[in-house]
Image (cartoon, rainbow, N blue to C red; front, side):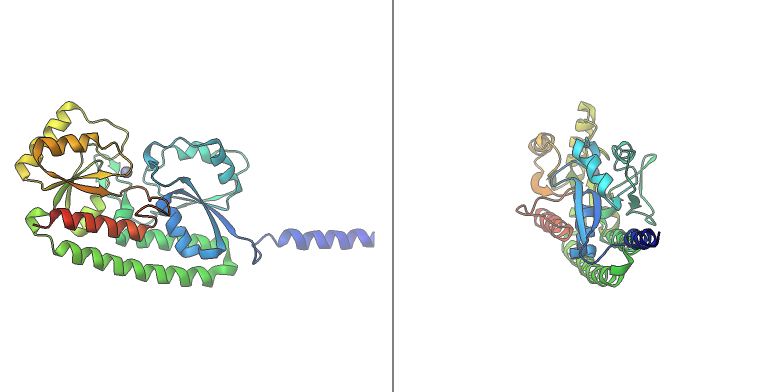
Length: 291
Ligand code: ZN
């Protein structure tokens, strides 16, 4: 009996040690690559981040892979954008056995509207990106209190970098003459960028990459490019570029290069991080729109 008691006491110790021990990593799933980058910047080597929609993937139209259910089942936290971006996610979260807490990174951000829907692309405002990072920091601290100081320190350093990035964007846009601050982009991913930094974007695909523009939509866009003398059209890494090439050919607006909207590239590509993505986009915009 005494032996049994000691054994039971030992088991209680083992199970109540469920909070993470130093060598264990907090397992976090991020719905797409930009969120994963935020998690890495806050979580450093204390987290183990898995991404569902990987590099160059299109988060609007993703079909979960069978392995995704396992990733979610193994995770302590699942970080999502929300605002209707991940329409494919609810079914995946119903997978049996998952005890992951769902963290909405856009919590406290007031969304822009596109028609009756929320515009999900809130990360294109660097100020909003800071809110994402604060929400992720708070979720990591709650899930792993032992590493709270580590997460807070890393978040603070990264938030300071984002402040610097925001100033860089403003300084770059200031150099573009106001009458040239307008471009065509494939889908409506830049409304937050537009609001914060004053570049007008016109997008033939609307808010999601799911819909195909009609012949009439395309004719409207072409007429608008001519009327407003829009200097450049931009391609994106997640969309078919034939439409943009056609608009460019018919209007003489130049192809300004690629804008990265919803997805990072892999390590070897030009935008493996969020900061690299924003820097790439402002460089592409300023070189296409400079007089
Ligand atoms: Zn998008």
